[in-house]
Amino acid sequence: MGHTDFAAMACPVARSMAVLGERWAMLVLREAFYGSTRFDEFERHLGIAPNILSARLKSLVEHGLMARVPGTDGVRHVYRLTAKGRDFFPAFVALKAWADRWMTDAAGPYVVLQDRATGAGIEPPALARADGSPITLDDLRVRPGPAAGTYLQRRFGDEAAHADAAAPAAGAPAREDGDA
Image (cartoon, rainbow, N blue to C red; front, side, top):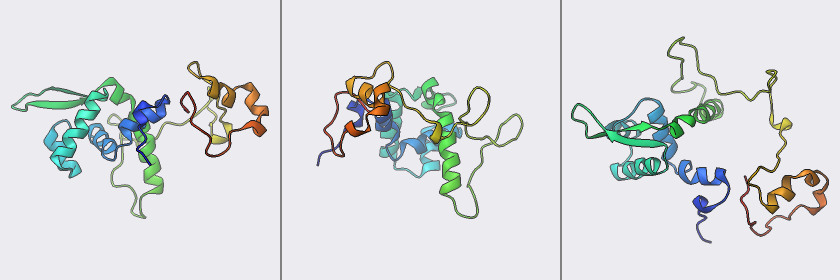
């Protein structure tokens, strides 16, 4: 069975995973969020081989999450989060909160995130309505977006609520437009 190229898929979530799903990418971003900017800092904090780190940083730069900029004080260059990379911070905080809840032992998390101004813990972004009431998975309704093709229009359009019998069977052939 061949390798699935997520980067070639229409779905933006799949394309994101082509970049962020690589096993070191999220940890490199974590270190950037924690303040690392120099190659040797990333290498030291991650314990990653230089060739792997170089490839991961190159990929994050190519995909616009980080920028390689000239350094100062004898440092050839440093890596800075771009606006695209900084926009991922709330998703990282949500992932870290999930990991702290489900993947730590009784001792708790290894690091906590605090607001520099107040010292208060940084909480993951909450999903809430305009009135402040929480939104849960049970409240989710998926609708076709402006880029949706025929398959997603049928799958998530108004008629989909009444078309359970017409749902594609497991293992149905690939569609012409992505599944977001």
